[in-house]
Length: 96
Image 1: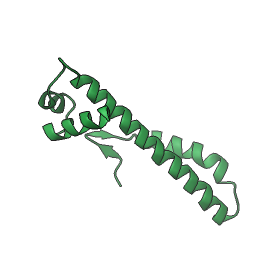
Image 2: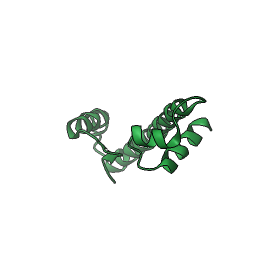
Image 3: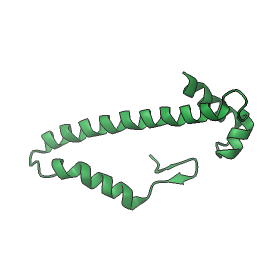
Image 4: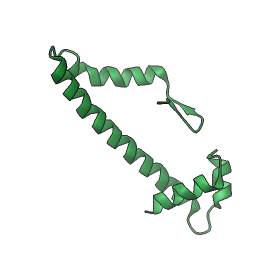
């Protein structure tokens, strides 16, 4: 697992602050099995959130490519996506 995507890195202090919020209600639970279930529910919720954020990113890229907008190659370069194919992939996801 990485804390980096396309050259963007998570700030460790921000990550810790988010974790502290999650753990505020869970950490006091004395039963490790219940804590496990609570943490699993949080994990599933955050994974769903990450998926929704990825969808929003793709919609933003699709908006950049709209008719008369930037080409896939221009988007790839401007957003540092690496390849034209990655830009196209995001545009297609964003339109879906």
